[in-house]
Length: 610
Image (cartoon, rainbow, N blue to C red; front, side, top):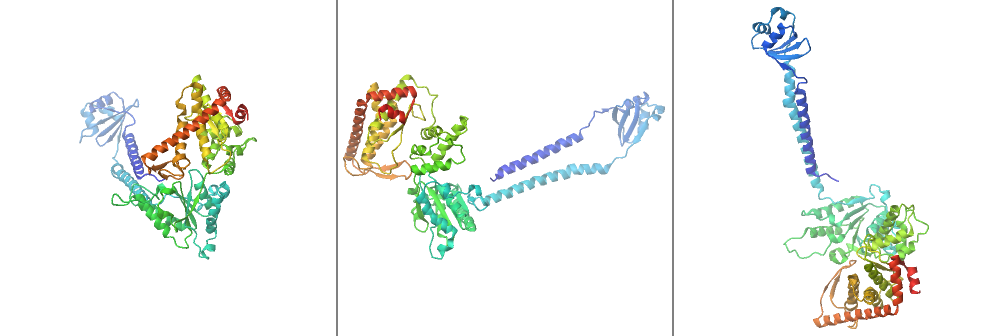
């Protein structure tokens, strides 16, 4: 990390001031007399001579130093022009007493005085100012160098200087079989480029990795570099754009200049959509800095010659916003879509993340994979990490199966809120609410099986019913949607039937049910209004949100509302019918929940008679 020029200047200034202070203290120390000496008059000196107290007198010009017989010292001063003996006689000193005193006449050492004065007044200030300006110029030079480095790409280079511990291969990436096959050609080209160049083949210059967050796009890119044994430049798209004009395009040029020196190599740009969004009209009369950066990236990709052995890998979860110029042939030729792992891939991912961790003999990764549908690779890594933290917290020597199951719920819903004390009434309402969900799920043919029921709060939920699909599927039927709505309404209907009232606990369930019912009508064309999709949607791929513009009349909107109401009403009637027919089972489940707070699948199936 480079130091800031301002911080360096302040540091140097502080050092100079500190040196001045130290020298000032030293001069003060040397100039301060080490002992206190009395200053007496010539009259007093004459009196002390007559009393026989004086042992020795030293004369230096007009300065007089007196040493007494008792060891004390004093100083005095004589008049200019007179000798000391004459001055003492004039002030009444006895001539006989003067003969018993030792007189020492000292010569002034003018050369050393001059040298000392010269050093203190001239040399030391010059040296200090010289050091001060040297530090300033040195810091200014470093600042200038940093200014030139400002347009250099902030890319991390792997592989060129040897990073054996950072090396990742396809063996470290679980699942993604088809995706790996797509990238094997890239690996083979980087290993044996001449085989393709001799045939006149053009290997794709750019490969776009598309998928939801945490599904392994960056990991797969590093695996390609590891398999190829080539340098790997990794840079985030956001690091190109700064507040200063021209910095982004300069960094793009710098990145590709460095890559050409290391070829064959890989350049990986993460979050490509941060600089690759579709260019729009220049409202302000000029182009944004981001667009200039994108233009430079397009130019650099076109600038590759046939023998250039540089391949660009980019990752994004927003391919819908990318500029068409990026996706045309000759730039990002290939698009590799990375989806969320299925149950077999989740089991393999868990196996990789279990390496180096002390696992108990009862660990069943298959069960963990079954309980984690829709989890990405990053989510699964987080599950194992939370399990390891929980085991260490409980001072266990191994990670147990229960630690993993608890960690799944923690990642999915949040930590338990056991400290939140519910009243007996709230606990009873929550128990019947979750029992209603579970009972409808068990008695409805197309609903997902119930794995666990709990009235222990997690995150924002006062309780939860955990469902796990029977199998991985990509398509869903209308009956499955209707069954899901009925299950969501199970808690609401249970509260209304048992207590004759409703609570705010069902608000989230009702919101989800309304969304599903509206999608059945407007998005999937599964209603009585016919196979028609209502509304122009712009969905955000791999993101939950989407925007919709209305393309139907008010009359049709009224029909849509009535159809949504009919779907929810029918699901409510179905839920109420099941609860009425199985009221004894509902009460049995609720009482067991109040007693134990948590019911697993085996115990639940025993309660409902499966």
